[in-house]
Image (cartoon, rainbow, N blue to C red; front, side, top):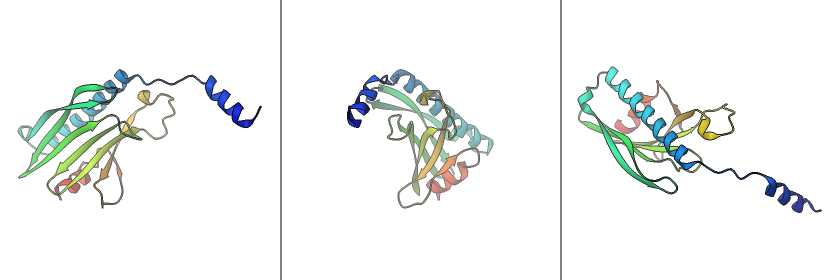
Length: 157
């Protein structure tokens, strides 16, 4: 038997990994909700009046996930508005995306699995969020309790 034939046979015997799309959507919405509530809590504790933070519902329609509503935020800081708008869970190379829009810039929050987590199933792993500034800006960084200020600096200037 040739190497190619052995390779093909070995792959035919492997079990097909099927994605549980309802579980994926549930995980995405839970992670998104925790992200946004954490941002809201940090802003309120930093002095942003809760009346200046508005929850939104965004209608998304994704292949395999169907049509559904996902939470977002609109925040008023001074005379400026910052929008956290979910774009979806089906993102190439990641598990979700939220666009952050402000008067002076844009950034994307991208969900990925936590580094070093060795669980086989991505939906069982812990997710982390990363900030990717708009085109023309260099670098990305982990979104954690200390990185809300750099994110707001990107979109508010």
